Length: 116
Length: 115
Image 1 (cartoon, one colour):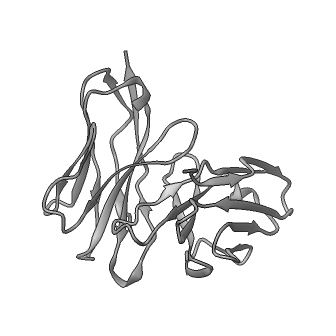
Image 2 (image 1 turned 90 degrees about the vertical axis):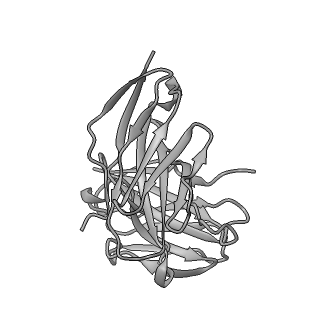
C-alpha cells in the first residue's frame, strides 16, 4: 500500500508568489516523522524540513513551512516568496519510528516550475 | 564540512556484467542508507547500516545485490549479473543518531545504465 501520496500535476508558479504542495500519508504507527526533500535537475536530494508526529507546532525553516494536519494525515509544504532556484521536484517522505525502523518511504513527487 | 559523496557518478555497463558503487558518508554520521530511484518515481529504500552492521534490507535487494560497510565508514553496493531493469539512480544517504529527527543527507547519486 502506498504510504505517501502526492498527486498534484506539475505546477507553474509566478516568482515571489507562494506555492503549496500536497502530501498525504498512511500509517498506524503513532510515532513517525515527515520530511520534505527538493531534487533539482542535478539529481541530488536536498533536505528541507522535518515534522515529528508529536510536535505541537508546525515546522518552519526559512521560506519553507509544513502545514501538519494530523487528523487528516496531511503534511503540506508551503514555499513562500518563490524564487527561480525553487524550480525542482519536491518529495514528501515518512519514517515510521517504532520497532527501530529507519527507512524513508517517499511519494512520487511534485514538479514545480517557477516563472519570472 | 563535506557532504555525502558517491563514485562513480555515471556507469554504463553491459547486461551480465558486475558493477560496484562507492559511498562516502558525512564523516561523523554513523548511519548509512542505500536507495534506488527510477524515472518518475521517488527513491525506494534498499538497505541500511549502523556503523558496520547491516541492520535492514528491503525485499527489493535481490540475491544479486550486496552491500558492505566494512569499517563503519564508506560503503559499497555491488550488483552482480546486471539486468536492464537495474538501470536507475542509486542514492546513498547518511544520518547521525544524536539528531532525534534522524534526517538523512543524500549524495549526488550514481546513475547506472545497463545496455
